[in-house]
Image 1: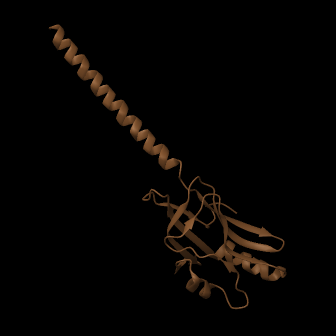
Image 2: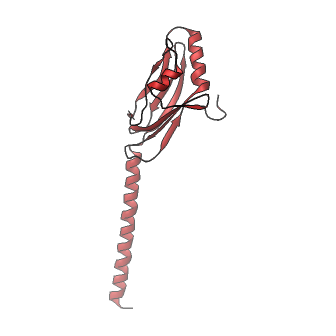
Image 3: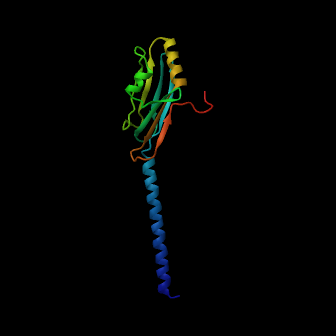
Amino acid sequence: MSAETVIAVAATVIALGSLWVSWAQTRATRLHNRQSVRPLLRIRRIRQDDLVGLKLVNAGLGPAVVTRSVVFLDGVPAGEWNREVKAVLFTPGRWPRTYSLRAGSVVLAGQEVFLVRLDGPGPDRLQEFWSLIDRRLVIEVEYESLYGGEGFSVTSAKPAGGS
């Protein structure tokens, strides 16, 4: 084999290696960029002496764009978490404070908001409301990052075997 052939083969191998390294670096950078704006929504049950509710928390690094929300009452879908569904779930005079989640709503990084909250005096009223949100009401939220297409979701349902 001549010297020119060896040099040409070596140059080709080096060029292909450089191409592979560049491709791997680009892929890693894209993954890092997506992770740097990844939202992480959690729904927490809150029960205190004078406050009962479900709190939505974005513990991630970027905003969460809501793509869909679904409410289940006793396992039956009731619709999107909006004013119409809330009017069916809660009777006048017992209307809690609520926060709607429609498609396109944005939950900013670090934002905490009560999806539903009842506070004030009346332990019996709070106990009844706690029973509703703890045993009967489930809210599911589907969301994505600013990049879109990830299909993340969070639910207020208790984990299997949880109390």
